[in-house]
Length: 87
Image (cartoon, rainbow, N blue to C red):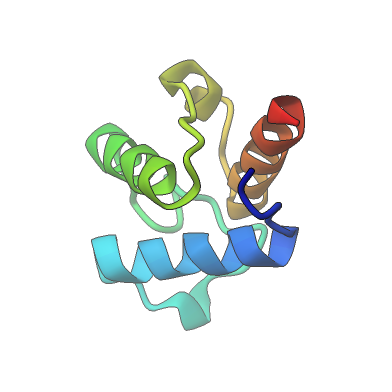
């Protein structure tokens, strides 16, 4: 069984993904940052981010789950929920 990730682990993974995949300056990113409005992530970028999260965590967010995600905090909550549901 995989090591259970903490919210901090997930946040670090997400921030690294934003920096690596989209060249976003994460010093400007916080939990309330809106992915679409503040970071200009589009639907194609969102799919790349979902794929990256799956590779890193083993958890695949469904596109419909991601439609409800607006902020960095929402992404972390969605990953934590998937992890808890998998237990």
